[in-house]
Image (cartoon, rainbow, N blue to C red; front, side, top):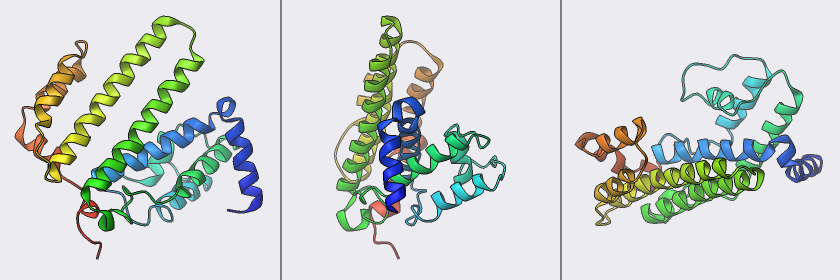
Length: 223
């Protein structure tokens, strides 16, 4: 990172609440973590996916319909290519994400630390994002009813993360009845289509087996 970029990043971080920089960073990292858990994150994602994402957007390429494309990911951040400030926010937010220290959930680190450390690191990083979002929303909201809404939303996000985390632990060989534990948590949700859907998924052996599947880069050396 150049001195100029570092100074700009520090300034945008300071004004993040006003410009939404922190939201861009959080959404970008969340996309990366989602891909890491799904096993679709390339080991060179810092150089390839993010570079293509920014260059394609800058050149005016339309966002593709393919959700696995890195260009689709940028459109998912809500970036408006017609606004220079949006481009600057996206560049700076993504710059911070790609320049983070390599964590145990990263495809480059996973094979050397083993599945348990990779799974724990992924869950910790994902939970930090969820908690950060709740804290920020609660600071900004004054209406009590809205605060209660986001507290419930946060609880459900944590439940979904717990399901994925515990299923991954089972995939790593830990004896844990994650299906029963998830069922107990989802049963406590208010009635909704998502509640019904998640409870139904827990009864599907094919889906639960897929939930337990670990990315190859969390369990085997990369070749």
